[in-house]
Each structure stands twice: as C-alpha cells, then as structure tokens.
Length: 391
Ligand SMILES: Cc1cc2nc3c(=O)[nH]c(=O)nc-3n(C[C@H](O)[C@H](O)[C@H](O)COP(=O)(O)OP(=O)(O)OC[C@H]3O[C@@H](n4cnc5c(N)ncnc54)[C@H](O)[C@@H]3O)c2cc1C
Image 1 (cartoon, helix red, strand yellow):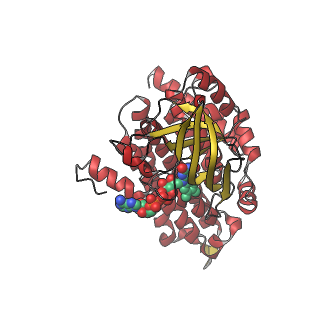
Image 2 (image 1 turned 120 degrees about the vertical axis):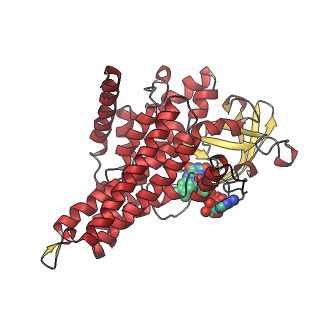
Image 3 (image 1 turned 45 degrees about the vertical axis):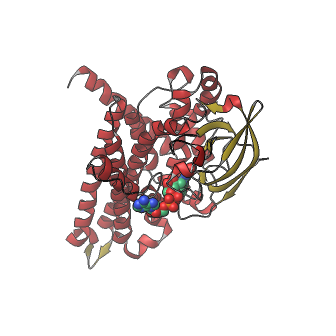
C-alpha cells in the first residue's frame, strides 16, 4: 500500500468512527419516538453540527472541511445506518451538496454570509424545487419572480419541500422568463437563496409514509420580496446551476439506502439466530438464510457502483451514468433488504419494536426521490445505450 493510499484509508476510517461516535448516541428507540411524535431531531442535528460534520463538503475558507463526495458518502452511510434511516439522513443531508450552487456560483459576500451559518447549524435550508403541476419536468415550473426595483417579487407554489417547518432559509427555483417566451425550455430559470419569510410563505405539512421527523410540505408563496443580492449567479441560468449538485445528491441517497438495507439485514440475521421455532433457530433454515445472503450481495454490489461514482466525481470526471445507476441499485438493494428483514421476523417484523417495518417505510422514498427509477432507466437508455429520447 502506498503512503497516499494509507493516509486515505486512515482518513476514511476516522470519518467512519467519528460520525458513528455521534450517531450511536441516538439509538433506534430515539428514532422510533421521532417516528411517533414527528418532531424534528434537533438534538441530533445539533450534535452533528457541534461535531463539525455539517460542513464536511463546504470549502475550508468558509468554515467547512473541503472534502469530497466519497467522504460525504462514508459519513451519510453512518448517519443512516444505525437505526435512524432517512429521518436521520434527511435532517443533515441537505447541507452537504444542496448549497453547492452557492459554493460554485455565489459571490464572496454571499458565501461568507451564508455558508458558515449552515456549517454551524444556525441556519437550516429547505429546497423549493418540485412543483405540483410540473413533476419531474422541472422546466415546467411556474413559480414566477418578477423584476421590481431592488429585487424580485415572487408568487407560486411548491410541493414536497422538506424541512420547511423548521428551516430559516429556502433555496428557491423560479422562472424569471415564462416558458413560452424562452428559446430553450431550460432558459429563464433563476435560483435564489433567501429567508423563509413566513409572512409570505405558508408551509402545510404533508402526512406521509415514513421519515415523519423530517417534514415535507405543500408551500404557497404570495407576494414575497427577494432582494437582488439573494439571487445566485446570473438571472435565467439557474437550471445549469442546479445540475452541479444532482450527481452528488444521487450518490448520497444511494449510500443512505444501502446503509438502511445493511442495518435491516443485520437486525434480521441477529433475529434469525435467536428465534427458536421447531426446536432450532430459524436461521438454520436455508429458506431464511439464502434470501438474506442474496440481499447482502446486492447491497455490496450497489456500494461498489456508488464508490465508483463518488471517485469519478471527486477527480472531476463525468459520472452521470454511475451516479444514477448507484442511486437506482442502492435504493433497490436497500428496499429489498428491508422487506426481507420484515419477512424474516415473521409477525414480529410487523411490530414497531423490532424497527424493521420502520426501516422499510424509511427506505421506500429512496426509490422515488430525488429522481424516480423510470427516469433513471430513461437516462441510461438514452445517454449510455444511445436509444431515442422517450419523453
Ligand atoms: C419524502 C419526500 C421528500 C421530498 N423532498 C423534496 C424537497 O425537499 N424539495 C423538492 O424540491 N422536492 C422534494 N421531493 C420531490 C421529489 O423529488 C419528487 O417527488 C420526485 O422527483 C418525483 O416527482 P413527482 O412526485 O412530481 O412525480 P411525477 O413527475 O408526477 O411522476 C409520477 C410517476 O410517473 C413517472 N413518469 C413521469 N414521466 C415519465 C416518463 N416520461 N417516462 C416514464 N415514467 C414517467 C415517474 O417516474 C413517477 O413514477 C420530495 C419527495 C418526497 C416523497
């Protein structure tokens, strides 16, 4: 092993151990309580901020650690893999690459004002991208920012905006030119980072299947004034800016799904050794062992694809196919492992106290967001297999 590889291995294992040290203070029962009361895990978020983990990918100049997506993936694997699932992951995940458009396209003043507050956990940011009438066709968003003296006046509607109940900031994707008036569908989109001003932004919580502790909302924006200084980069170029954070986000969601799957698989294997039926542990039966062994293999394979995508991203190489595939495979492998864990527990798999039914509910969203399986398949068909665009 070369010295550089050795140092890298050391860094990775120190991240793994450091994050696990914080995460393990919040056991599965803590997350079960949050699943019941729906309260944002403030103590957990604070502990992660105090440990300096929220700034892992942020530039050192602005208080972060300046590390890459590989390190962030290792961190998020620990965050999601000790009983907290997506509730734990989503409470901190957005900090890692969500603000990337600010890092890449923001001015020095914007970065100095906004990034240290995100790193220290003083600010939480919600992402207002998805709209009810546009769905995955982002260029069809209608939230409109009209130019007025000193800034913009915004009105529109967003849906699924996570953390809007607790966030102090919102990253908002808007149109500044109507779709019909643009040469290309991706033109005329502008991105802002601004205060989540509740006098003009109403967030209505959406009751949902899992990740109850991290709220998702229908958001109504009426007559919101955004000063010009809160616009990121140039007007009309926002679509190209958000592309910068898409691949890292996919890699992180994929690793979170693998982590949840591994957590569930571990719980299933332990239960299979302990549960005695017909005078022997159920884990002695191949009908119990084999599906668990198979799930392990799929989880490992997904992890390798995710690490490949992360390495490519970190050295600045194209990684769209690998990041999308890693997210697809990770989410599938994670979901299948959680389902098998529920089945392995028999009736008790359905009981909350064994946590695996919750992990199954938590992991399901990774198959849907931030992009669905169908859209990933269409992407691979078109971009890798050179088949005609299907939509
Ligand atoms: C818990 C949760 C949290 C979220 N958090 C956020 C957030 O913080 N901020 C944010 O902006 N968004 C957020 N989202 C939104 C999420 O990114 C979207 O739900 C997701 O991208 C899918 O979009 P949609 O729901 O509008 O699906 P739709 O676009 O309505 O699609 C519905 C179905 O049709 C399929 N489909 C559509 N078009 C095609 C086609 N051409 N070919 C094949 N299949 C097609 C889709 O794959 C999908 O299965 C969140 C969603 C969830 C569930």
